[in-house]
Structures are given as C-alpha cells and as structure tokens.
Image (cartoon, rainbow, N blue to C red; front, top):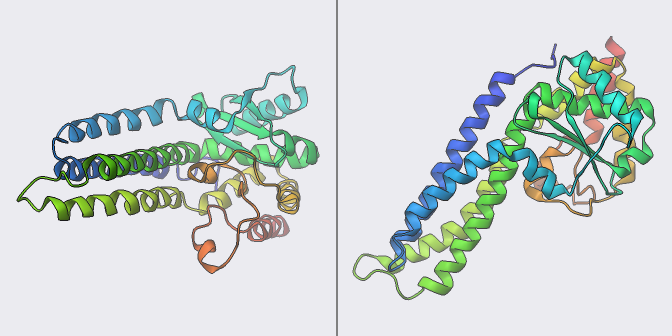
Length: 302
C-alpha cells in the first residue's frame, strides 16, 4: 500500500536526471548555433554559463519562481484561521514541517505545492477553491498537496516546470538571433549554410518537444499516489473525491496559466481543452473520473 513517503528516492533521482538532460540539451543547442553563426563563438560559453545558472537557480529558487508565475500572495493565520489550522493539523499527522501558505486570486478552483524539500515547502490555493469547497473537501485537497510534499513530487515537478519554460524561452531567443542576425553570414567552406538550417530547425522544434517531455516525465501516477496518500491522511477518501467532482463540474480556466507548470496544479488549469485521442496522450493529469473511481474504490474495500 502506498504511504506518504513512497518513491522519495526515485523522485530525487529523477530530479537529477532532468537537470542533467536540460544541461546537455541546452549546451548542444548553444554549440550548434555558435558554430553556424559567423563570429558567434561567444554563444557556446554563454550557453554553458546560462544553463548552469538556470539549473542551479531552478533548484534553490523554484518556489519563488512558481509563486511569482502564479501571482500568489502570502496567507497568514489571521487571514484564514480555518485553513491555516487545517494545514497545521494535517502536517502534524503527516510528520511534515508546516509549509508556507499562499493564496492565488483566481476564480478557478485549484491548488498546488512547490519547494525543494519539506523544510522549504509551499502550499497554495485559489480563492475559487476556497469558495466552493466545504471543510471535508478542502481537507482532502490539502492532504493531497501535503502528500506531494512528503513524496518529494513537488521538487521534480517544480524543476521540470522551470527548466521547460527556460528552455523554450532561450531557444526562441537563439532562433531569432540566428534568423535575423546570422542568416547569410555562416562560415564559409565549412558547410555553414547547411548547419545553419539544422540549427534553425533544432531551435524551433526541439525546444517545445523537450519542454513537453520534461512535463510528461512527471508521471500521472504521482497524482494517483498523492490521492491515495491524502486519503490515508484524512481517513475520508470521499472528501477529496467530492472536491475533484466539484472542480471538474466548475470547469473554470485559470486567468494566468503556463503550460510549463500545468502539472503542478491539483487539476488541469485549462479544463476546457479538447480531450481527443492525441490530447489525452499528453495530458498532465489523469481523467477526474479515474481518480474518483480509484478513491471511492479504495474506500469500498477498506
């Protein structure tokens, strides 16, 4: 049976794999473009430096970056005593330090957890979530997010989100530099023109694919695990199941959402996106119906 700390070591290893893959890919793109652009040798060391800076920064400052991207605001005990005490009690039950609490002013009901480890964890909820859920449902959602913290899911998830966004942004910058600054000035007699085209295609195609693969590296199984672990925390799977159903029925898209960090949220921040066969292959969350069935099925057998 899954416990709160299941797969911790696996998720930590996965984090290092993602960071290494990001470094290798980014340096490779920098090398190709530095080779194809006349006088662009400086791009290669810059790419290495920026890749190292982004990777280290995504680890140490991942929580601050995600908070900034979601426009979350700190939440104190006096702001929402019930919510604060609920997280406090669940943290004690789970054996976790009390995370920092944040609120996102958004009518879409959702929540996320982030941070590099339990001692630097953050749990955020939207105003929409706070408005539509009752106490047992809110408790189920908070237990789910705390389970991500205990399972170390939020570390690999947050780093994947940050690195995916950086990879897309910088690759687009390199593409524009090559297109408008280096076209027609490739190195003579070294196959520069052909490599220029390869570099352009690589920058344009590899970046979004790599960003998608980084997000998909966060297995949908972690959502099922967090659901199960959260149910064990509250001893009331129906609470989270009911919350997921309410959120699914609301189907309110988030005002400010990024595809790079979609997997960090409790549910898909774009609930109205098409669910055709191809789209389902790239979904960041399992279908709500499957999550609810797993929760209620567990409750039936206990």
